[in-house]
Length: 242
Length: 242
Image (cartoon, rainbow over all chains, first blue to last red; front, side, top):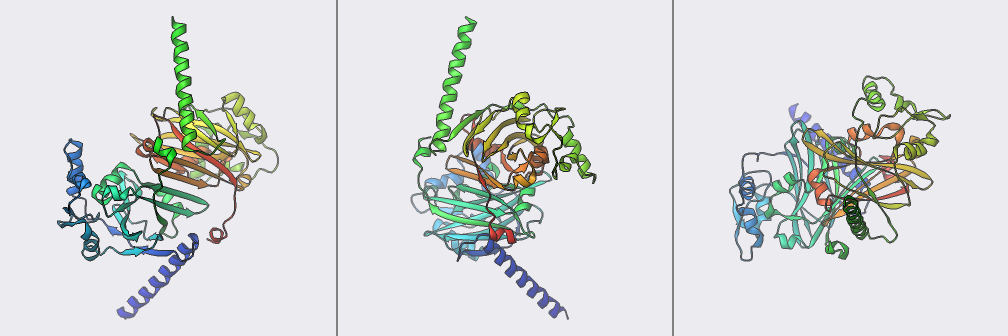
């Protein structure tokens, strides 16, 4: 009996996901756009980590190990860039992607434009939604995080990091787009390198930030669809002068 | 001597404003776009007001006076819609604009696309930056507010309200755009009617919300340039189905 109940539950889940997928595709109506359903992970990494230690030392004026990697020219070991777990792994930048896939089971998607459908937005903070995105010959890490910067007031932070060096990251622009209920919010920026620590990008607030009420307006039945596009960056002459 | 010092100060101010105006024009490079320098006003309206009372009664399940005006068909008296002051004025919707200009000295600008250049972003909260915008045969009220929703953490809230009824407001879409430092943030939505109270729109967070660090990234020397565009709304068939 338990087996049949579980089977029925799984079928209902599949129908629900299929329906969400269909709706997300309809909102971002570009034909052939890939929709990826991303389940949340309750983040286990809230003990002081290598990145947190790096930030502390940066505040004290010591060159942090994260930034130390910025000017890597020779192959050097880099720490694990998974934002979820404190992982002792170290390796070359070129094998970070396979480490994230194999050890941390982070999915990878291919295509210039995808829709990231984060489910269960109502779960309590801290929670992360993470995928890798392969595009234009590079791999990017998309992180959506629910976090309480101010106690009792969770916010959502979304950013895209290049699995590469900061100088490689400067060649790209990423766009995150929310579109629902006659409202549209677009964030465009240069991706940061995973060597710069996703935690510090989020604590600086240099990313797409949503308060809970806005996240609810954009979400549908507890799921938030984020349209993602990556392009090679064009330097605007007017901005470059600034 | 004092006279010469004051004259010199005024000339320096003019040069500074001219420079800001030039830079804002360069960021939003559309030719002929009007740049309006908007000075802050320390909001005096933080005693319980008519709108606050309306919100309280709404929470208690009583139809608030603000919403009472939503379904106005015959000319009726509406309260003053100035977000800055608790003003006892009442009048017809058609004369709200002249009341705001004459009594509250709120400037009015004409044109489909303008740049709103808010100065002195570093002033402490609560502070408001307000102008009226005349476009497509209607007048809109643009409100940028610095407010501490969470004590010690000021945020910026920007919204556009139609000086008209909610059904008239549904015919328009407004866009607010920030563009600086290789980052771009766009917010598009249907304007709300001034009869719905700007305070409640901001407390609901149904507007463009910026935390202090993001506002600093987008501002230049304490001034924030917001590109504004208003269009007649097109109903997206895919969204209308949702």
